[in-house]
Amino acid sequence: MDRAQKEKVVEELGQIFESSGVVVVAHYEGLTVAEMQNLRGQMRDAGGAVRVAKNRLAKIALEGKPAASIAEYLTGMTVLAYSEDPVAAAKVMDKYAKDNEKLVILGGAMGETALDPAGVKAVASMPSREELIAQIVSQIGAPASNIAGAIGAPASNIASILSTIEEKAA
Image (cartoon, rainbow, N blue to C red):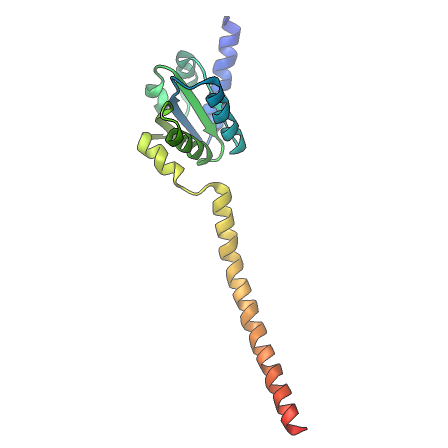
């Protein structure tokens, strides 16, 4: 890899560290190519990505970035998982690490907040952005349907009472 390619990699990594909601660092020693492709596919489906880069270049890219705290985790065979959604990458990595003991989560960063392995697990247990939106929409919609039901119920009760009175009168 020549100097221009290294500078390009550092620039790409810098953009990743700058724009990602969460970055997770893990050791992947012993993973087969098929297992790594499976991880990449799961991450892509969740809206994230997986990147293997030289630790030295990643450390250079981290300088002055919000996720600079993860530099200490960049030793050995490391893989970076990231997503704009602050929960997606952590969820996928946590689930994959449970299924495959060769993937060991070292830590990560959520903006300027450093995460240890327990922190990544805690983030993974949080609902995703889409799940939160669905919960909020259902909470907003529930009172409206209750009000509609309450308003509609007396009208049907009054109508049945009137029809009963009318039948008795006839």
